[in-house]
Structures are given as structure tokens and as C-alpha cells.
Amino acid sequence: MNTLLSKINLKMIIPLLLLVLLVVVFSPFSVNDAGERQVIQTLGGDLNIRFQPGLYFSGFGSKVTTYPNNVTIQASTDSKASPDADYHVVPYQGTFSEGDNALMSHTVKWDLPNTVESMLALHKTYTNINNLMTTTLLTYQNQTASYSAQRMSSEAHYSGGKSQLNAYFQDQLRNGQVLLITETKTRRLEDGSTKAYIEVREKLNDDGTIKRTISDIQKYGIVASVATIDEVTYDERIYEKLKAKIDAASDEATAKQQLITAQQEALTEKARGEKLIAQTKAREEADKLQEVIRAEKASAVAAENLKKARLDAAAELALKEAQAKGDKLKVAAGLTPKEKAEFEMQTRIGVARELAKVAVPKIVVGGGSSKGGTSPMDAIGIKMLMEISKDLSRK
Image 1 (tube, rainbow, N blue to C red):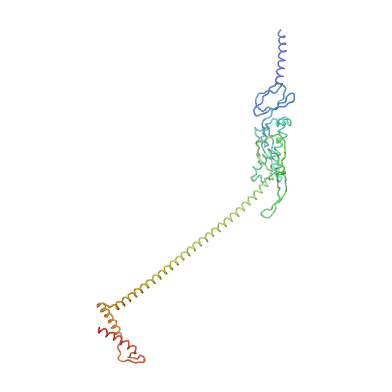
Image 2: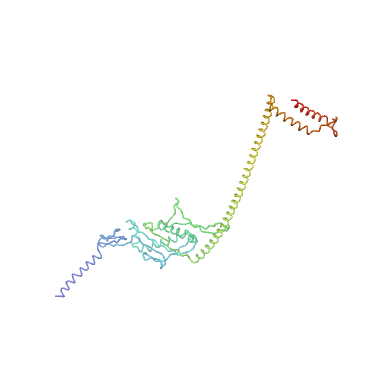
């Protein structure tokens, strides 16, 4: 009896298990997680895309391929590998414009296309994300890093061109790799010598735009949303060459600075001399002006003194003339008894004073003077004084 029941249960369990297995394998439902998209291929070969997260009906027997919305690919040394990178490789060698080699570490986050048409075309070409990363994204990333380095010299990169290299890298990842033209040219240095160098410039289309190559990155709308050149490790020979150039540049900079300092000192001394000359000139001009002012002042004072002297003399002359006229008028009009007496008294005093000075001679000698005698003219003068005295006595 028990054996019969066991056989019956086994016959029921096996079909049930087969049914569960068929449901699991050929389930018409699928789940899309956030941060992913799924490509659904039905039993009939039709393709659909599921971007929204969650449970959905995918159909019996459909094949579902999951892609992440974005992947991060890192090229770096193992010690600097990020645990968050989806794919990691060791650094790829790049070449600068003058042939200098260096290992280039870089990280790029690639965003997959968000349109149904682009995503289906991408899936038909690569069928899965690993194939896309290893055959296209990584290769394009390494090539672009090297092509970006070719647009500058190692010296230019070392001397402050890191941000420019990063800009070249981002531009070519997003817009297509730039086709370049390289030419060897020479330039004349300050000391008169010449130096050969490699000039790199972009090829241009007929409309003046930069000529670029179009890859699957641009064709399918894959976008490098984040791209960085993390590290550039030069070859040891490059470090030696850069060190020599740096030392030479440092010596040149020092020499230039010394020249600038000497020129500045010369200009300073010149400025000081010009200032001293200006100060001396200003001082001399001030002294000269003071002397002119003093001379003008003295001239003005002398002129004023002369004018005053002339006025004083004129005033004195006018006063004397007025006094003389007054005396004349008084005489003509008749003096008062008192004034007449005073006038006569003064006249007598004057005549007496003059007669006292003369020794009256007893002998008058004609024809010249003689010892002990008087000339006729002296005698006439004496006679006139004596007559004036007599006239005054009679009055």
C-alpha cells in the first residue's frame, strides 16, 4: 500500500517540478533594475527595449540582455585601481609630438544611448556590454589619450599643459578624433642660434571646421560624460631631458631677472639723477626769481625815492618862489613900519658884516693889484657898500 502511494506521489511531483522548471525558464515576466536597461528578443526574433525599472511582461521564451546605463573604464596602475570601475586595465603608452613616450592613466565614464533606435543598433553590433567595453570603448579611450598627447610636446605638458591635454582628451572622446598635420620647422633663438621643432596643427575641412574621424562612439550616440587624464608617467630619458631644460630655463630666467633688476636699478638711478637735476633747477629758478623780485623791488624803491626827491625839490622851489614873490609884493605894496625897520636893520647888519671883512685902502692902484693897494673894481664895490650904508643912515 505504501509503495503504491509512493509511486502515485512521485508521478505527481515530477510533472509539477517540470512545470515549475518550464515556468522559470520560459517565464513571460522579467524584472529590470534601476540603473539598467534591457534588450528583449522574442521567440520570433523581434527586439524591444525596456528602460523603466520594475516587473514587466517580456513574453514566453524571450531572451533578455541587460546593459548598464553607464560603465566606467579605468586605465591605471593596480595600486590606483578604483573598486567602482566596471573595467580596469594597466596604463597605455602615449606619444608626445616630439616622439617622447609616457604611460597615460585615464578614467572615462561612458553613458549608453537613451533612444530605442540607437540602443537596438548598438545591441545588434556588440550583443553585450563586455564586448562593447573591450573591443571599442577601451580601445577608443586609449587611442584618444595618445592622440591628445601628440598635439603638444612633453615639455609643454610638463610646463603647465596638463589642463590643455585634458581638454584635448575630452573633446576628441565626445566629438571624434582630430586628424593632425605635423611639420618639422626651425626657429631662431635669442642668442642667434636656430632650433628644430615639430609643429602640429589640425587638418581643416573646406568650411574651416576641424576634420575628425567618426567612430561607433559618435555613430551610436555613446557619450563620455566624465573623462580625465589622471596621471602621465614619463620615460626616464624624458625626465633627464626635462630636468636639463628646466635647469637651463631656470638659469635663463635668473639671468633675465638679473638683467631686469640691473635695468631697473639703472632706471632708478636715472630717475634719481633727473629728480636731483629738477630739484637743483627748481632751486636755482627760485633763487633767480627771488633776485629778480629783489632787483625789481630795489628799482621800484629807487624810482619812488627819485620821484619823492623830485617832488620835494619842486615843492621847495615852489616855496622859495612863493616866498620871493611874497617879499616882492610886500616891498611893492609898502611894508609896515615894523617890517620896514626889521628889513633895514637886517640890511645894515649885512652891509656892516661885509665892510668889516674889507680893509679900506688908502691908495688905489690902476692897472692891476699891487701890494698894499686895491684894484679899481674893488674900490668901486667898497664905494657902493659905503653909499648903501649912508643911504640907510639918512632914512
